[in-house]
Each structure stands twice: as structure tokens, then as C-alpha cells.
Image (tube, rainbow, N blue to C red; front, top):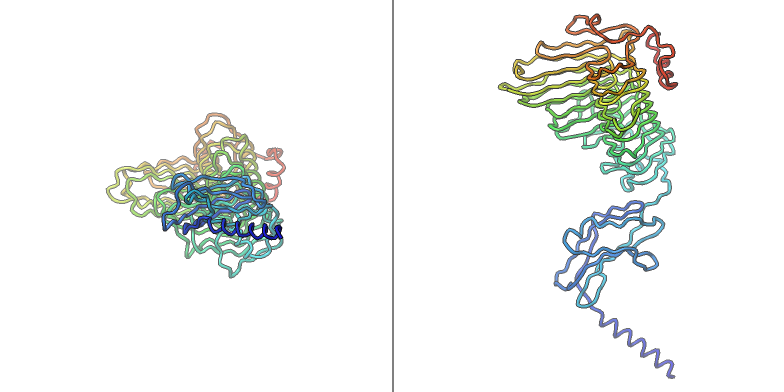
Length: 514
């Protein structure tokens, strides 16, 4: 009997204790939750309508066994925003609890459970699954079949950075139509530390010649990605075919455009660009960098085994520009090559792209200053570092329309069959312009300072460069041949010239000279 009485009194005691626990109308909710493989980032909003919270607020990360893995004490209003828990185990489900002091007790005013994203391979078999990658920007993706986006509205899954991996396994993603330009435009939009490999991209359309897409602010545009921002990222074995970029920019800051990427800070190996058109028009004075592969190649980037066949057309259609500086860099492979931090950062590159540049700066009346600098090269527009094993086998055409309002503007154009402007003391090795009907035609007004040749538009170094012309020579300025005055070296044969099997195979495949 005493035993049963003890049990009854025990139960009554617990009930009394439960009734004594403080209660509160204060609540906590979570927002801006970003779940990654080993990180959870979130913000907390606490509501306390009756001003019952008397002490500290703590956000705790609790494991399934009830142990506290981490905690954050809220001291200021800023502490509620961007709370980060890292080094998580993505095989566990965590509970995040918000504890608040009410009277003398710490009670839970909000909780929610979260599971970090899986590190296992995620297989993509449908366009819808590809688009849903935005829910896991650090996932490991594998493409199991071709994807056809015909009649499917497309927006890149990665307007925020992609840091995972994507293995296309040699399959093709095709028939994508972009209906607008964004800050980062491309199949993968914005890539940070991610890796993309073994993929064919076919029939991607970013605007049309009749209706180019427009952007008034800064942008980076590429068929693969607009911006690839980290040296730890890798682009490997990618083919881009039968695609086009038609883009009009009114930016006063920048527009970087390339068939692969607008701006590239990573490692690129084994990329082919074939039958791609790039048409860019600028109506303002933002910096322009356009490349058959990459618009801007930055200091830590590396680019190797890249073969480009792209028709590049740039039109400057200025709209009453007054007292502005303009810089335009255009290259058959790279617009602006600034990859200076690695030895042989750029090697084994080839282009048979045709480049057309039409310049009407639209300078306004009463203009009293300005510098218009234009750099156009068959391989690279402006190069701050060297190249090893490369050739260009396309044509370059530049037409400039005189404007009587530009009397006080300094206009300097640099046109080279290989490099528009070369500013490095490093030695360029095994790099040649091929000629067999390929032309360089420049038409300018008499107020332009022009430097042009079949190899370098201009180079600042006096170090001998292993660069020359093979095949027909051709350099016409204002309808007059300037071949006789061109100091470029002429090669009579290329037997054993290249020191790379890759570039030799690319040269043999082109067979420009028969």
C-alpha cells in the first residue's frame, strides 16, 4: 500500500512542478536559412509582445542525442543575423533552439530541425532536376542522359555561387533560350569553387541578332557561366557548339563576355568552342572585354588546350558620350589576359575566329577630353603575360567612323594578328598567325593613333619573341597594303615548330594551308 501511495505522491509532485514552469508569449522564428553540406546559416527574429524576456538569449545547435554541439549568445541586434554553424556532420539531423531567460528560467521560445545537404552523388535525368540544383549549390551532381530544354523556361540555378561538382559524363544539354541578361548570365550563372566537367552544350541562345538582350548595369556573360570566381574551381573537357550571344550593354562600368565565361579566375583545360556567334553592342563607356573563350582572364587563372571557332562582332554605338574614357579589349580567345601568377598559365590555344569591330563613339558636342583605347588581337586583345604553343587562323576587320566632336579626344587603336597589345617581358613561344585568305583590314580616320601588324599591334618588351607568320601575308590599312612595312617574322615552314602534341593535332585538323 505504501508503495502505491509513493507513486501517487510522485506523480502529483511532477504535475505541481510542471504547473510552476514559467510560460511566455515570446516566440522565435528562423528566416534566410541557407543549408549546405557542412554549414547552416540562418537569421532569427524574436517577438516579445509582453516584454517578458529578462535576460540572455542563446541560440543552441543540438545533436540528436540531446548534447549541445555549439551555441551563440545574442548580445546586439546584429547578432541575430547570419548565425553560422559549421563543421557539421551531414549524416545527422540537428535541432536549433532559441533559449530566452524569462524571470530566472531559461526556456525554449523557438526550435526547428535541419539536416545538412548530402555529400552523395545526386543524379540528374530531367531538365526540372537540373533547375532544382539551386536548392543545393554545393551538391555533387552527375548527368545520366542528354537534357533537352526545348519549350522549357530557363533561368540559371546559380544566381548565387555554385561550389559543388557537375559531371556531365559526356552527355549534352541543349536548346536553352535565355530571355534576359542578369549580373551573371550563363548555364551555371555564377560559379565559385565548383568543378564542371565532361559536358557538351549545344544550341544555347542568349538573345538574337534581331532582338539582342540588353543590360544597363555591370554584367558578365558566358554560355557556360558568367563569372567563375575562384582559382580552386576547374572547368574540364567542355564542348560548346551551335550557340550565340547577342547582347547590348549600356553599362557605365563593365561588360565582360566570352563563349565560355565573361570573367574567369579558375583553371580551364580541354575546351572546344565551335560554330558560336558573339555579337555585342555598347552604347556607353563601360569597359568592354570580349573573348572567343573568356572576356577577362585574371591573375590566378590558367587556360590550356582551348580551341575556338567563333565569329565575334563588336559594335560601338555611343550615345552622346562626353569627356569619358573608353577601353575595349577583344581577342579570338581572350579579351584581356592578366594571368601572371603561374608559369605557362596560358598554353595550347588555337583560334580560327573572325573578328569584326565597328566603332562609332557617338561623342557629344563640346567634348573637351577623353581617351578611347581599343585593343584587338587574333588570339588576345590585351596581354599582360605570355602564351606558349598557339595559332590564329582567322580574319580581323576594324572600321572606325570619324566624329568631328572628337578633336580633343585621344584615340589609340592597337590591332595585331596575334596580340593587340603585349605588355610583358616574358617570352612568347611557338605562336604563329596562319595566312591563306585570312585578312587584316583596318579603316580609320586621320585623328586616330594606330599601331598594327600581323603579329603584335604593339609590344613594350625588347626581348625576342618566338612569334611569326606562316602562309600568305596580309595587312591593309585604309585600303593600302602595309605588308612591306610590317616587321613581323615570316616562317617558310612549321616542321617541328610546335613543341606540343595537342597544338600540332589542332593545327593538322585545321589544315588552313592545304
